Length: 308
Figure (cartoon, rainbow, N blue to C red):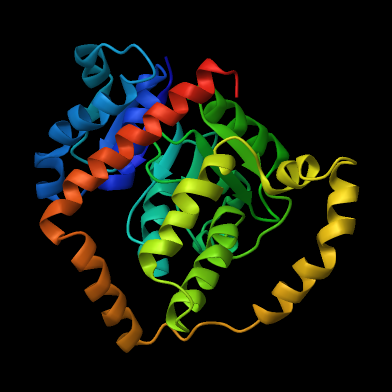
């Protein structure tokens, strides 16, 4: 078994740790916050319940494969890849990677879970940029089998291929960006949809309930098995070319109407918070999160059963 280092043991780091460990990796975990470490194994047990829905696991063995380390140096010594999952603050990421570079062997891949920050910015201060990538997961990464690998122009092809192999062996489906772009693939697609959802709600076309229903009970069901190009291929008798030919005028008209960017004002965010808390109280969010993880695991089980 190979070692994976996890730097940052919060929600994303813990989820990564369980995902890697459930696939057979030894996981070395470090976080400077003692409160996060104190509750870490309790979180691991909760996340393991989700994985057990679609894969047989031995909880005792899983926990034995995850070791909490007292220093950042300990996670670097023998790890083939170090997955950083600290706050999305560029200065903090740059500083933590200076430490990781100093303590880790040259063959160790340095990887950030950043959602928006470009690898060329994160690794700006490092000497050996050729071994650095962003590997952005979809939440929560212990049950969502996806990771997008974004190299910088200086990342070596050998590192990209090794990273793909490591994530694939951990049961993730990796994609590789051909060049840097802010937000990568996942958040740019998600952001386009979110912007339109905000526009429809803010301008009074639909309630947040009905907008969410449109995703949960229509698009989301299809998107669990089909991407946008696959959907277009199946939407017309002649395939994707026929589909775009039929619908391109309407698609282009909508795109022209969607060019504006919502303001995301503090006043609007407060309105959203008020409406959402009417649907779900803050005290009920933890239960909703657990249910989300369970349902995602069930969808993953169905996809595995169907060979998807």
